[in-house]
Image (spheres, rainbow, N blue to C red):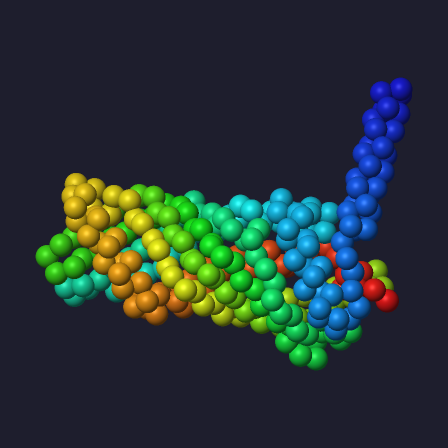
Length: 252
C-alpha cells in the first residue's frame, strides 16, 4: 500500500513539475495580437534563436538537426540508352536553427479567410545522408551507394499554408490541409562519395560537372526536391498546431 501511495505521489510531483516548466516556458514566449506581423516576426525569430532543441510542451521539434524521410529524387523509366534512378536515405538537415523569418501574412483572427504565408532565409542549409544510384549512360552502367553532402547557400523559402479550424474543449485549433513551398538559392554545392567506386577520377569528374552546371540540375530536380521540403516543413509545423490552440498563440 505504501509503495502504491509513493508512486502516486511521485507521479503527481512529476506532473506538477512538467506543468510548471511548460508555464514558465510559455511566459518566455512573446505573444502578439492577431495580425501584428512585426510582433510575430520578432517572436518567431526569438523562439528559433533561443530554442534550437525544440519545445516539446508546444509540439516544436528540434531544428538544429532535422530528420528527413527516405526520398527518391530521380526515377527515369529503365529503358533506352540513358536512364537514372537516385534515392536518398538516413538523411538529416543542419542549419534551420539559423533561420531568419522575414515576413508573415494571414495570422488574423479568422485565419481561414486567406492564405497563411511564412517567408524566411537561411545562410547555409546542409543536407547529409546516404544515396543509391542506379542507371545507364550509353555503355556505362552505374550502381553506386555512398555518402553525400549538399549545401544550399543563401536558401530562401516561402511557405503558403491552407488551414481549417477545429474546435476542441471550446478552443480553436488549426488543421493544415495544404502546404506549398517555394524556394530559391544562390548556390548549390553537392558531393557524392564513391559514385564510381573503382574509379576515383571518374567520381571527381562527375562531381565537378554537377557543381559546374548546378542550375541545370536544379531546374530538372526542383519538383522532387520541393516534395522533400514540403514534408520537412509540414512535420515542423503540424505538431504545434495540434498541441496549442490558435487562440492561445495570441493575446486576447
